[in-house]
Length: 157
Image 1: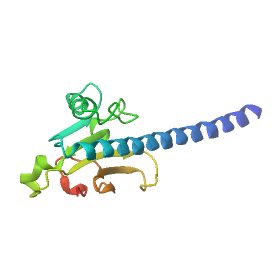
Image 2: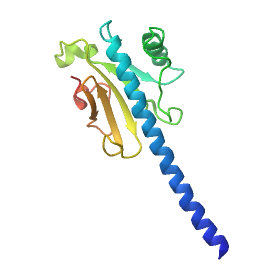
Image 3: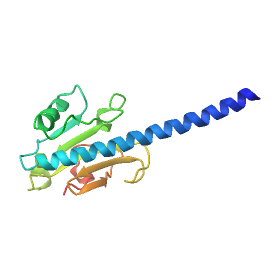
Image 4: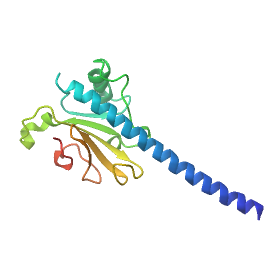
């Protein structure tokens, strides 16, 4: 009897701890996005990096992000998703510049950008899921499994 009560209590505590950790990771993601927003807004007048950057340590994209934002003094270090080692690269942070697809979407503003990320829990942004950051703020991302080629999934202005 005592063992079953202890088991029940420990499972409740463990579940609460897991939820708290997920909420803390989501708070970190939103904080990271705000850092990116400040850096990119400062950098965009110098010319944003073109193309797509899957922002995960060890990748060439991460090195490019480091060159653009850390070496230029816009960020002290490159923020990465708290679970980047466990996630598919498409579920980590992903930056893209709208000018890279200007010919495709008819966008003549070369200073558009998106940083896409995934939350695990409901946050002040809404339910768990994909979101993106643009110069206009945070927006829900309209696909279950985002493709960087689909600029229409997130408003970029």
